Amino acid sequence: MTDSLFSQTKLSKVLVDNLQEIGYQSMTPIQAQTLPHILDGKDVIGQGKTGSGKTAAFGLGILHNLRVKRFRIQALVLCPTRELADQVAKEIRKLARAIHNIKVLTLCGGTPLGPQIGSLEHGAHIIVGTPGRIEDHLGRERLDLSEVNTIVLDEADRMLEMGFQATLDFILSKCPTQRQTLLFSATFPDQIAQLTKNIMSSPTSIKVEST
Ligand code: ADP
Ligand code: MG
Image (cartoon, rainbow, N blue to C red; front, side, top):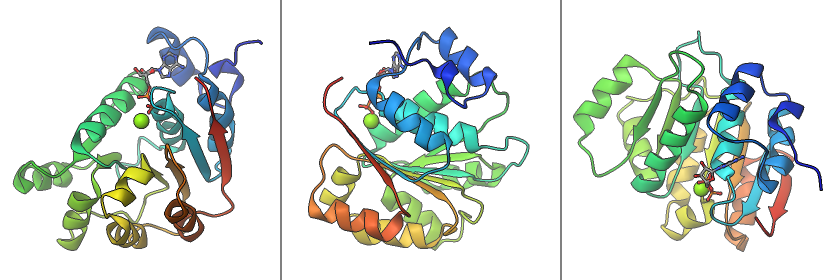
């Protein structure tokens, strides 16, 4: 089998060169199967086990859609826990290293609201957070998602298990309907199938068994 190279995708040279520098030589199977659809702007459902490289798949999609000079929130990543949100933000910053001035802000529970409100006032391109805290900021009108073009639900099955269905519905209702929605999940219970029907448009489903 031949390697799938990031350079064979629509990714910009800046992003591809940086991937080389951080030691990502070829795409993992889930990246090879989802990234072309993601870069085409399609809604994508990705299923693959832990450690398969899902973060870079959606992270590169976000960076591909981003207009750095437009200093508005353009992407929102929802994660089940603060730890996962921190990991995702770290990975996105690594992927974005070669592009100057990209601001990634994490908004999670368990930390005081005040400093987060201050950070929001300073602005960001990408928000990574947990549903409860994002809902909280939206309710206080501290967060404007009207220019979001990419939404990611990471570990969607876990977010539903934690009872975030209504919260996700509320957050999604504050985002433009014209957008790209990416959903990643380890398992596909009926509730996920229902969710994807409600929030995605003609999604491409990709399931990768092995890594
Ligand atoms: P998942 O979300 O699928 O559980 P992650 O996105 O956290 O997996 O990735 C797992 C690890 O693999 C991370 O340490 C990440 O830096 C690394 N990784 C991702 N893509 C590549 C790649 N193409 N080449 C090398 N390492 C990669
Ligand atoms: Mg992950």
